Length: 279
Image (cartoon, rainbow, N blue to C red; front, side):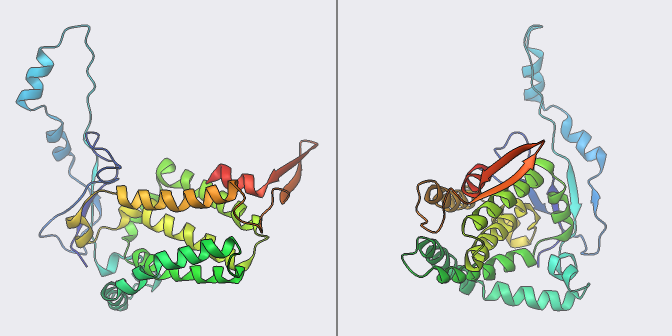
C-alpha cells in the first residue's frame, strides 16, 4: 500500500477533468498512516490565491469594460492511506493484517482477473443474442474478479467523499440503477442476464464513479489520462444500447411493460424504453 495522499474534491479549473483526472491526487511524504483526516491548512489555500507577477500585469492592463474570470484553487484534503484505510479492512471489522494480505495477493495475481474481462463480456453479449445458449450469460460473473480487487483497495474516507457528490455520484448512480432494472426486466429477470447487468453496474460504479477513491501510491504516481477508461465504458454501454434499440436481443420485446395508475391515469412504460432512457 502507498503512503498518505492528498485528495482534492474538486478538479483544478485550469485542467480538463476527462483528459487529466477527476481529482488531482498527490503523495505527501513523511506522514503516517494513522494521521488525522483533515482539510489542508487554509493559509496555504490563501497563498495559492495570490496572483503571480505575469497575471497581475495582465489584470492591470484591462479596461473598465472588460470582464475577468477568476478561477479559484480547489480545496485540498489530506487523507491517510494504507491497509487500515481500505474498504476491505472496513468489511473485515478492522482486521488490517488480513486486509493487507488479501489485497497484496489480489494485486500479485491481478493479471488473471484482467484476462477474463473481455472474453466474459463478449460471451455475455453474444449469449443475449441467443446465437449461443442464453444460460451462458452466467459467465459474466467472471467480471467480478478484477472489479472486486479494485473495490477492496479503495480508500474508505475518499469513497465517502465521492458518494456525497450529488452530480458526480448520486445522479449517475440512480439513473444507472433504473436503466439496469429496465434491462433486466426486458429479459424477464433471467438470472444469468441479471447477473451480467449487475456485474456491469458494479464495475462502472467501482472504476468510474468511485475512481477517485483509489489513492494508492502506484495509481497516484502513474497518473495519466482517464480517456481510455471512459472510452471503454462508453463503448460497452453503447453496444448494449444499440443492441436493445435495434432489436439485437430476440428475448426482449417492447410489449414487456411496467403498468401502474397515477392520478387516475393508466401509465405504461416499456422496459426497453426504460433501459434506453436511463442508460
